[in-house]
Figure (tube, rainbow, N blue to C red):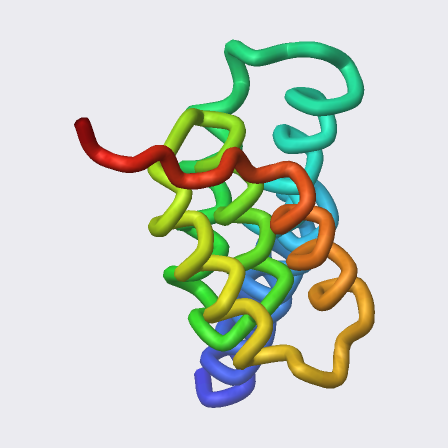
Length: 123
């Protein structure tokens, strides 16, 4: 009886480990899905995926709020979505603060400064 119980526990743990492994292999992490959606927006010319990309970056940030690449990705998705420049600037600044040692983040921020529209004075 005891041996059957141990075997059952082992079997249940093996099944749970298999399910976990299957999910890890089959389902992309949120950041990978977000990056794929953002690439589709910019490189494949699919503007219909902008909202999906921004939502995927938000899910990635919910999972890992200290990820500078997720903040930068969200900034680019929001910029493509047409968000106000100060909001995108804050997102880019957050990415720069979290990843000051990452050259890609600094390069993306410089590129954003070049591309952004200058602020227009209020009428």
